[in-house]
Image (tube, rainbow, N blue to C red; front, side):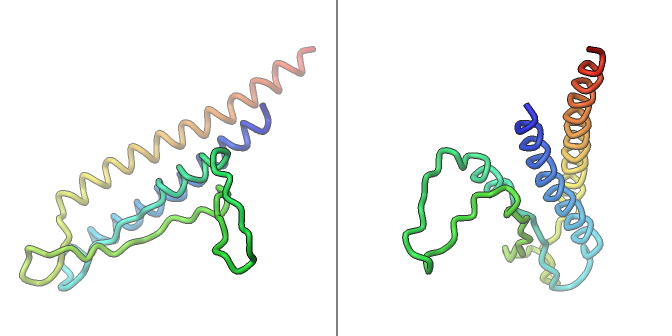
Length: 136
């Protein structure tokens, strides 16, 4: 159970890191909604995290030291900021849609709060095990 606890907390921690960075990025986009030629930023981490979580199924082996490293450890996962260079419908070259960013911020805030709640629940489970164990 302890190994599962650490695994769950590691996954939640990495997800919280990514969601927090996304929150900062969306706020940055909103702050620059009227900056000419500004290109909106996005954050990507879910696909990498999912692959790391499925590492047991992945049996890749490096056969030569010069091969690319196989980064499947959850601790190696880092959120990536991507510049969205899609076409802008605005004359000033800015591609930020304030309504879309506001909706993304609300969605991201809900996700962050849910993750914090799940993290608290994980620690509550351990607290309950310790409390129940001390009764015997």
